[in-house]
Image (cartoon, rainbow, N blue to C red):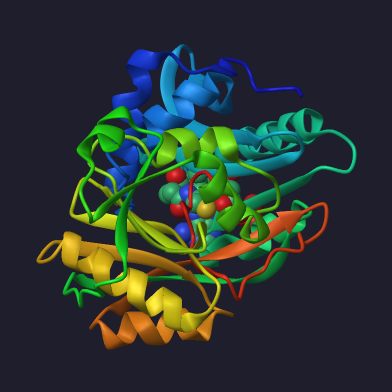
Length: 301
Ligand SMILES: CC(C)(COP(=O)(O)OP(=O)(O)OC[C@H]1O[C@@H](n2cnc3c(N)ncnc32)[C@H](O)[C@@H]1OP(=O)(O)O)[C@@H](O)C(=O)NCCC(=O)NCCS
């Protein structure tokens, strides 16, 4: 792609990650404390920096969930440089590179701010549905049959208490699988085991039929993923999870077609505070939105 003189797009340096977090925070996106670290650990090439005469002025991620699902996120240009067409250059470059990376037949997803839907449509994306952010103060309702899940962590195996269950990552992935376009074992392996994360679930006949995860963010916690075989199970895991983070601010991103999830959020006193348009390039994947009660992340899918 031809870029104007002085403008370059290339790899992000790891020391620049705090600037990315700061920009995201300034947009009010309240990034998870370890979200960028998880993505960086799995795929540092996903981070692209926009530079003007060497100055770092913008960022965007193109994260690949192998083998062929890509996700575009964290699209930010420093406020001082907006409105001059630079963001379009970065966005188009990222889209084209990600299309190459997911290959022929691959699909790219994104959660875009509503105001920019026409821009993304012009870039080839189609709107699937809205993801609504429900927010408030966590007030839990404990269900005695919901257990704390610790995924493949050594300390969980040693803990041996009634309310702490060690589960294989494969069983979490099995529960998650129909709600995501690809098997994301590697991603969940890091997402679910990092510092400060709470995951609760319901195990029936050694299968996980519902689980919900909360991760610490710059302010409070975000939920995601939240997966359940039916709304009753979802209500039970979310109620117990909110108890684990009782009193903290919580944000829960819900696919609007899952009205049951929105009802559960309202019943817990959460209100709509933000939202994104879930859009796809390459076709809308056949995921089971009725089982998807909470999006993992607007940045990484
Ligand atoms: C989005 C962003 C990266 C664009 O960077 P930029 O350098 O200003 O980009 P450009 O000047 O090339 O403009 C790109 C398009 O974004 C549109 N745009 C930017 N902000 C917009 C907004 N709040 N509402 C509607 N459109 C917007 C511009 O109108 C333009 O579309 P057009 O070509 O149809 O006129 C920048 O505005 C930004 O960092 N915004 C805050 C973070 C954000 O919202 N990111 C997008 C998340 S999906």
